[in-house]
Image (cartoon, rainbow, N blue to C red; front, side):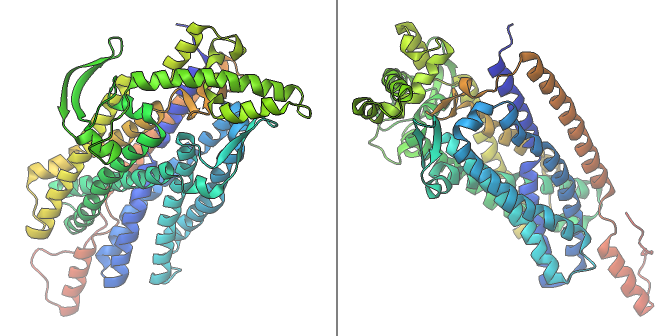
Amino acid sequence: MELDIVDLSRLQFASTAMFHFLFVPLTIGLSIIVAIMETVYVMTNRPIWRQMTKFWGMLFGINFAIGVATGITMEFQFGMNWSYYSHYVGDIFGAPLAIEGLMAFFLEATFVGLFFFGWDKLTRIQHLVVAWLVALGSNFSALWILIANGWMQNPVGSEFNPMTMRMELTSFFEVVFNEVAQAKFVHTVSAGYVTASVFVLGVSAFYLLRNKHTELARRSIAIAASFGLASALSVVVLGDESGYNATHSQKMKLAAIEAMWETEQAPASFTLFGIPDAEARETQYAFHIPYAMGLIGTRSFNQSIPGISELEAIAETRVRSGIIAYDALMEIRQDREQASAEAKAVFEQHGNDLGFAYLLKRYVEDPRDATEADIIQAAEDTIPAVGPLFWSFRIMVALGFTFIAVMLYFFYRTSFKRMTYPRPALWLAVLIIPTPWIAAELGWIVAEVGRQPWTVDGVLPTALSVSHLSVSSVLFTLIGFVIFYSILFIIEMGLMLKYIAKGPTEDVELTLAWQESRKSNQPTAGLTQPAAS
């Protein structure tokens, strides 16, 4: 098989991004849970909550450190592997990345040190403020990254300048408050909260099964179940909002997720199950839920949702319009000072379709030389991989509803059954620990595969975004990154399992009971001086 520089660059970025995203959700979620636990400690002054804060905070710290190590290289790749992308849209994309580094990352990194080393140097209130600033920094970091990513999905607040041949920022406000970015942010951080909640729930269930650190485990389950239930419900609601936004900004992605080959007349139904056949352009054995897709995609029962075939025809029209825009652009570029008013007017009329003309550069050097077959093929290229999108979305949604059911059950047992949990339920909590990461990775597949063939939707094709590198150099760095990140992942797992097995540094409840018995000189039966766990 012939190796392609575009596919290799995409594979490299995908592998580093997915490795990095193994650590991001847990960092985002644990930062909030740890801050909640310390808040309870400050309010109650009970040592058990300080113990919980320090224990879960240690696991947060391990995950945070590995997450930083895997995240730094990602931003360097924009210059190494995607230099034309950086040149073309850097004025817009670079701004939120710079703010993320200056405001969010440094805020988080600075106060992480105070969190771990300030227990005996800060007052309880001061340390609590530090904990919340760490949590705020973690979430702000995600905000600016997702603003940048949201602009790639829905490029608002910008326009193409034919004189500089680059996209330029016209409204920073529109970029920040992009509806796609905001929905993506709250959906992603909520998924991180679910990830941390399932992690805390599973580790605490493991302790109860082993009859170790039971006081810490029961209180941790109470926090995880309540916080996780609210988060899991918000993930579903906000995921629905993302589907609604896709109806306006990424119709082809929505149609591909549904494997909706033909336009679905109102009220559109949702395909719960089926087997997409891309060659036949049909979904076999489809089972539909009436009205559901109409509500998700249009919030109505009287609007149709365009299918892949209709959107492909629209794309073909836009490719032809883009060729006209490209021709006018070349005339303007040839003589910037004396370019005719007619050429400028033509470009003004067709300029929004210029990106579709760039799709032809995979087949011809000059889009104006494209044949009918090239134009038809370019339009077909706007269809993302239907099968992976269809199944990734449905598995992700199924896992999302599973999290709601699990969290609801443990919330019920915590609130109404005096924190008693059957052993099968505890084993289930342990077994589902990996599933939030699976759901998160599937969510990124839906978001990023669904955007193809675009780096910036409708503006810049992925095939034009890469640097001029040799296949061997990209392949070498790809292998190097995979090996290095795999080692970091093994280190992460080893450290996490080591500290989970070790548990908290001391059993606070046992220590307090022993101290009380010493004060009263009335030894309690079976109670001995506690040792470090």
